[in-house]
Length: 197
Image (cartoon, rainbow, N blue to C red; front, top):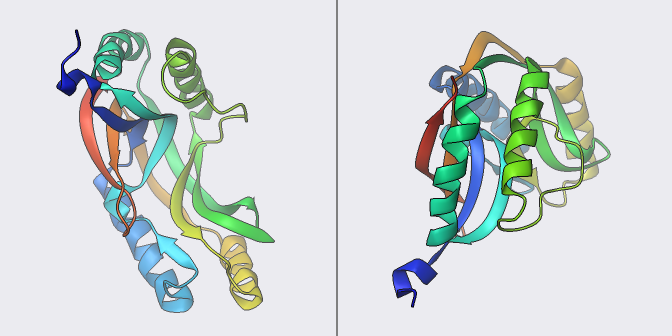
């Protein structure tokens, strides 16, 4: 019989965490844009929480998380580290109806996609079904709720102006993360780290 601790569930995802140098530059960009857009329509992600999501599970039991701790080291050990750079800005679903404002990525995107595909295939039986849309690695900077026309026009100008970080990000580990929900937004905690080799 399972104990109550085994029945406990954690809201879980697998991610790549940006380096601290990037967090500083992304935070500088956010501060500049906050002064223009404010916080009403924009919910800004804390710079230290910015990441690439490789697989979102939703709620997993402790036993399922232990299973991930058996699966993920084997995947990580077979995948080489790779480099990414930050280039461009954009919105999902599109600049006319912005709901997510993001910074784009360049570099070894094919290696990032291959890693994501390996993880999705190996964990498809756990948690929520994997998303069926193509993987587009990005860094979420803000979530938007009902921006007005002038904000949408201003955001379009910001996107066209562009943004980049010249310092490359050497991606050498994958993180298993827990999301703590709160009225102020999600807070993320690292549960485990797996080195790429």
